[in-house]
Each structure stands twice: as C-alpha cells, then as structure tokens.
Amino acid sequence: MQKRYKKQYSSYDNTALVICPNCGEDAMVKNVGSYKQASLECPHCSLRKSGNELVVYKAHIKLYCPFCAHTIRYEQGKLKEKPKNITVQCDECDVSFQVQPKIEKYLDSYGKETGLTHDPVFGCPYYFQEDFKGKLFWAKNREHLLEMESYVSSGLRTLPYRMRMVERLPTFIKEAKNREAILKILQKWKNSYK
Ligand SMILES: [Zn+2]
Ligand SMILES: [Zn+2]
Image (cartoon, rainbow, N blue to C red; front, side, top):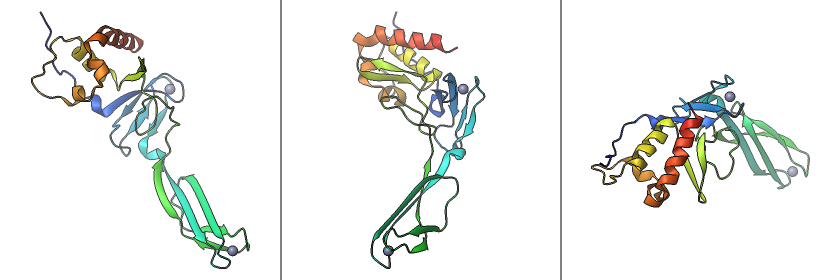
C-alpha cells in the first residue's frame, strides 16, 4: 500500500536551524522573516543576539571641492549611530568643511560563505545542508526536514492541493531516481540533530 503524502508541519517558515558563529554547534534563528523581531540563540554557548543589534549605517560623501573642484570622497560603514555632519578635507587644497552624508542602513551580518545557504538576517549557514550531485540540498529546520522526508517517501505524488513548500522544492529532490539517496541524507541529518 502506498503512503499518501500529508502536510503535517506548518511552523517551519519562521525558524531556521543554523550553525552557531561562536561555537559551531546548532543554533536557532526565530522570526527569521523580519530582522526587527528576529533572534539568534545558541543553547551550547549561550550566544544571544537580536536582529535589531545588527543594524548599522554607512555614510557616503562624494562632492567636488567648492574651492578647487577636486573630487572628495568619503565612506564609512558599520556606524552604530546615524552620523549627522562629517568633516571632510580636500586633499588638493587642504580646506576642510562639514558635509551631511548620504546614509544607508544595513545589517551587519556574519560573513557569508559562498556556495552555502544562510538565514537572511544573521547570515549564519543552515545546519542541514550538503552537496548533492553538484546541487545544494538543504533543510531550513527540523520541521522542513520531516516535511521533505514525508513527501519524498510517499509514493503518491499527485497532490490534492498545491503546497508552497513542495512547489518550491528543486526538481532533483522530487526525482524518483534520487529518492533513496535523498532519504538517506535526510535520515543522516535527523540523526545528527536530536
Ligand atoms: Zn554557540
Ligand atoms: Zn579643494
């Protein structure tokens, strides 16, 4: 008898299981959809961070010196406060004056590694991910893992209704020829995280 795939988990969109930037163990990002509410917590090293703590500003200035027309450029990032006026000096005629910079707000996330999937707020790599025949296979969290397992192991792929998670899955996960290998990886991930 074939198992019909049933959607059983629904909370996976808002959390991400990631690698702790501090100790390398598993850590949890909650409310990953909004940096204002997001939090990163590691149960192993007690790292705690909120998305709001990551907010920093970058100040840019580009102008022509009003005295000698030489270009003056200034850029400073990772500022905790929005700077108001900044004193710049012309390299050419040494005149200095105050300018209001253009300000850009951004998140000072952890450095992302190329080729990996990260949470969008803190920039920590997902805990469950690995290369599968040249493609990156990943699960956002344990619920997502179980959801994929339930889907891949079910023989009945004709779904009575359309589901976002399944629609978003890359084809290689859905292909019958990869089924055994995908299930093996999911099982291994499950065992690595209790
Ligand atoms: Zn940690
Ligand atoms: Zn000048």
